[in-house]
Each structure stands twice: as structure tokens, then as C-alpha cells.
Amino acid sequence: MNATARWWHPLPDGRLQCDLCPRDCQLHEGQRGACFTRMAVGGQMQLTVYGRSSGFCLDPIEKKPLNHFYPGSSVLSFGTAGCNLSCKFCQNWEISHARAQEEELQTASPERIVRTALARQARSVAYTYNDPVISAEYVLDTARACREAGLLNVAVTAGYIHREPAREFFPAMDAANVDLKAFTDDFYHRLCAGHLQPVLDTLVYIHRETACWLELTTLLIPGHNDSPAEIEALCAWVAEQLGPEVPLHFTAFHGAGRMQEVPATPAATLSRAREQALAAGLHFVYTGNVHDREGGTTRCAGCQRPLIQRDWQQVLTYALDPAGRCPHCHTPLPGRFASARDRHNVAPSPVHLAPP
Image (cartoon, rainbow, N blue to C red; front, side, top):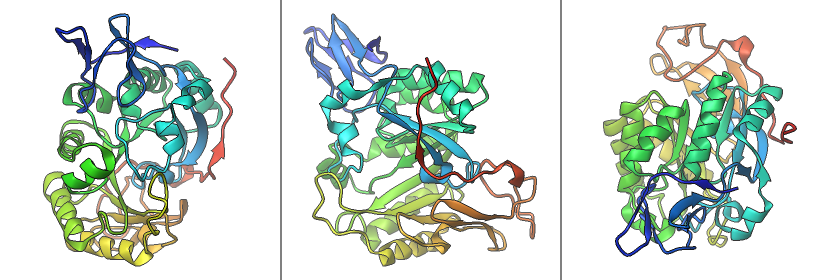
């Protein structure tokens, strides 16, 4: 299904320039942008994946990963196809980069997504798997339908988006996990075909100018973005620009995309990165893609007692008081929380859409 896209303008030579993201693709008639989903058709920009999805899954919110957004709740996850970055290490390569994937997408109107989420008792809907900013028109329509039905909206994104569309996209989200892929422009240029600064600008905008709850994830790839110096610089920037209360997740790389030959991230690298981040003053630092109970535990920033303990993505203990504070020293825990009786752990499972 095609829909007229927003955020573009015509050029004097007849091409159309996409204004959604910093790639600023300039398209002749019939050409697609680097994201693959936006196309020049009849003098207008078209979104070719509107109302179509690559699949649905019911997940624990911790899988996104979001550790301070209704822990233990379930989220209906879905994506489309394509991506506006070209990460050589992409873990969803088939969805993000295969043009043939468009032919396999299933019809999924915003209203049908809402009915499915409600039927599966999900608290929220996550726009994930590929980057949701490239199908922003579809995501925003779905987000509005979700809010009308009392559902929350979650974006899992690399944050590679221009400011104008970001001002509509992120206020429509209740939470976002932004993938800060590295802390050098060289990494973004060589391995992602992008740049670092637009992502940093997006992070600052979300945190300072919206009510969207923000968490960050950095996938540590051996030999590419895992040096102590780079991690120190990243943590210092987060502490200064976002503050110590924004959660940071360090996750382990396992061979993927065009980097199958790169070894998996040692658990010791994640532990060292976590220790560096805590030493830099960040209060909530987690490890992922490895079995590490301490790295999944949320501790009080005041007294350091464990408040939420996890095993992988399962919540084991939940010790917050009804106001979302530490029951021992009454320090508030930053985030969005419910009382313990509202929580229900779920295992990731495929989901069939509700009938049209």
C-alpha cells in the first residue's frame, strides 16, 4: 500500500528531495531513497510500506530494552522493512535491507494493530525490528490510534532523523530506546553510512524537550567501538548532556550482517564498560545479550539496595513502593512504573493479527 509521504520538497531539476532524515536523498521519478521505503512517483513522494508489516511478536518490555518503563509488562512489537542506515553489523539484515521483503509484508492497519494489542493484553505497542522513523506517517497514525485506545507507544530507533519530523515523531511516543551505535563519527561513516552528530542532537531533543521516556543502548563490537577511551567519552557526554538518570545499556555483539567474522563480545568487556559508566556518575547502567544478573539489576541511586532484579528479561523481584520510590530511603526511581499487581512477565512469542 502506498501513501503520500510528508517531509519532502521538489528541486528545480525535477527531482524530489526527502527531508525526513540527514541522508537528504534526491530522487528522480521512480527512484527509491536509501531507506528503500520512500519513492518518487508522479511528482510526489510516496511511502511504499504504509499499512504493511514484516511480523508481530508479543515481548516483555525488557527486550526492547527498556528497564524503567513499566517493568514486566508486555508489548506488541512490529516493524515494516528498510532502514535509513546501512549498518554492516545489522542483526535484522533481512528485514532492513532486502527489497524482496516488501512483497512479503502483511496488511496491518492502525486499527487492526490496536485490536491485536488489546486482545493480547499488551500495555504498549513497539515500533521496532527496522527503524520506525522511515515509516513515520504510518507510525504516527498507529500511535494516535493506540493512545485513543489507552495503549502506550514505544520506539526502538537509531535516532537518525531531522529536527522537524522529530518534533512530531517523539512527542507521540511514551518511551524510546535509542541505539547510540558508537561515539565516533568514523564508526558511523565506515560501518553505518551515517554520522554521529544528528543522533546526539536527537537524544538531546528527546530528553530536554519531550515527555518521552528515554533509554540508550550501545552494542559493543570488539575492536570497533569498545575501547576504554571511547566508552569514557560516551559516558562523559551522557552524564553532561542527558544527566545521570538516563539508563544506558551495553549489549554484546554476536556475529551478524556482514560482520559474521567478528568475535562475540566478551562478558568482561561489558562488565568493564558498566564499571566505567558507573564511575562516570551514571546511576543506571545495564548489560545485555549475556547472562548477568547484576548487570540486569536496578539499584536505588540513593542507598544502592536492589529494587528490581532480573534474570535475562524476566523480572524476579520488584521492591518499589506505590509511588515508584525505594521503600528503604524513599529515593524516587526515574522512569514510568506501575504497582506490582499490574505486572505480568511474558515470553517472546509470535502473534497473529486480529481479523480485519
